[in-house]
Image (cartoon, rainbow, N blue to C red):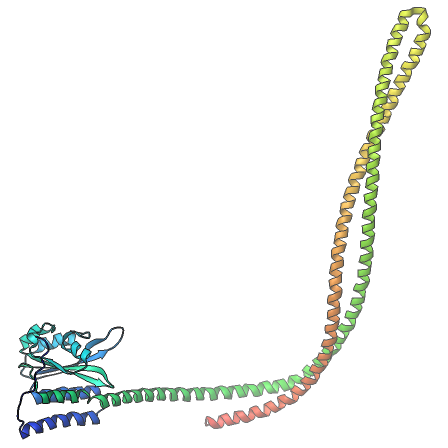
Length: 451
């Protein structure tokens, strides 16, 4: 069976009935405006309702909001001593309800008081079996509404069918909103307790921090006094050191000027060496060309000598033939034989001469190749030297620039050092004032800490 909405019975109320209603309303109203404990209000609410309507069992669910709304047992209940409902109570405490499920879930969803005439046969009542064993039949549920929001659901069960009168329905509606002031006071009390705890913790922390700070200030002031006295003692030495530094910086500036002049002179010398090396490299190049020409000429002479030698060999062959023919001619060939001998001798001398020339030409070739190799090596060395001189020239140029900057910085440092010397003298005076002020603060902190 579903929810039952019955029309109120036409019943005439006696004076005692009216007084009972007023007693119920008065009890819950007084509790609502005198307690700030929500659980206390719920206990009084359950006890008073069960007493007034003679109901056997009452139980409260708290609404827990999150990703899903769930109604969980608040573990607050009221049971008449003559009702054997332990099994029903155990099932009730363990069970959770989502909106729309069971009697508590339906009342949460509708946010109005409602009831089930007979819970043992209702299709949407999960605890029907245990309710039947306990002898519970009629079921009622009240939403406790605070700021138009259901914060908990209180359910009641009786041994008879649920059949409320119209006056009962109006009482239910009225009582549903009575927990509002209690809930607000309970929240304020909880907030005040939490604020008091936070305040106590913050005050304790602050006092501890102040105490530690005072100790730290006291220690710092004592240290400051010691440092101020030490600084005052050292400021005179610093002044002397600053004066000495100023003199040293001036000497550095003068020395840097001399170094700059020396580096300029070195730069000029390196530039001259660079030009000379460049000229030598050019001359070596021209000499190398002349040697190459000499090699070419020697080669041509060698070719001519080869031709001459070939002619001499041919002449020797002709002289040999002429000698043979002169021998055949006998006395007629004697004169011719003398000429052939002379020609042969001339050919032999020519061959000997060409051999000598060939040997000299070979020596010229070897020498020219060696000279050319030496020229190549010398040219490579001079080229490397030229590159090194060029690199050194760039370095010297950069050094000149750097030295000039050092000189300018030294001049500035000299001026700043003189200013620093004056400032050190001012610091010495200020440190004396700090010492006096630190002593005063130290005395004030000691007075604060009661020392």
